[in-house]
Length: 277
Ligand SMILES: NC(=O)c1ccc[n+]([C@@H]2O[C@H](COP(=O)([O-])OP(=O)(O)OC[C@H]3O[C@@H](n4cnc5c(N)ncnc54)[C@H](OP(=O)(O)O)[C@@H]3O)[C@@H](O)[C@H]2O)c1
Image (cartoon, rainbow, N blue to C red; front, side, top):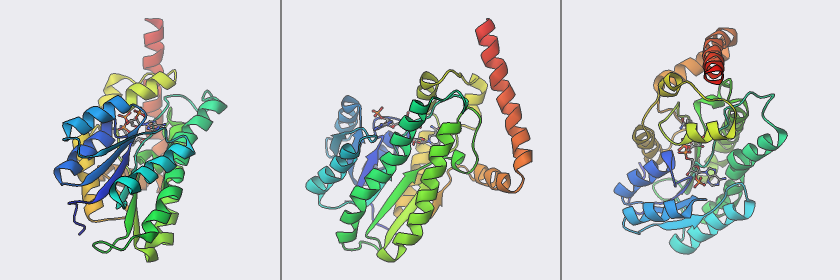
């Protein structure tokens, strides 16, 4: 069990949603935090709420230099990095064929290359550190339930989340002997700004009943992530049921296709109705 008190945790995407909730939870455990995102005023007000004890970095993770700055500023301020939480990311509600090449490149730049650029900057620093409570460090990647099963209207996003999972799976084995843990996180729909952003970037609006379906709170997801930081594990699935359903999907994909087709049709109908109305 790692002692969270004084632990240095970098959280990207800390200006909203899951990242902000995780920051609040880790603050209560006396961790030292680096809060990164593009909206600096949001980060400053979160830091003020938490007693201005933490470090704020304005960064766009789609830029390699910004990822490097996050890690450089962490080392300069706190001298080590115990857990890197690569959480920044977004979705686009759109069909695959209507997602433009530029949109594909942009979403991979933020969700995937944002993750790998942070990893490239952080791992050399972790390798220099002595182990604390059995670990030199930990990389926690916030992927999604969509990593294991692509979701209609979230095809590009699902692809980025699958890429993050593959990276986590490979790295976990590669870094085990160096005492660096790698954990992927797989939330289902969580009440954050995710849906609003995804709608603003695509043409599709989800029916509110679907947006409310199977949603979990950010506090619940953050709690499970804190457990995964204190006791590193391979994967964190905040909804156990989703893990079983997605597991079944790899064995019986056509059955899951049929379930997904029902959801797809509901979205088609509701978008048609709102256009006609
Ligand atoms: N909510 C869900 O249903 C759900 C489910 C599964 C997985 N997830 C994953 O959880 C993570 C957090 O999402 P959320 O639900 O908390 O959404 P959110 O409320 O929209 O928060 C997204 C965060 O990511 C940051 N971000 C986005 N693009 C960025 C960029 N280029 N550079 C730096 N920061 C960036 C945003 O900050 P700025 O805009 O200030 O930069 C914000 O802090 C994402 O990786 C998402 O894929 C969410």
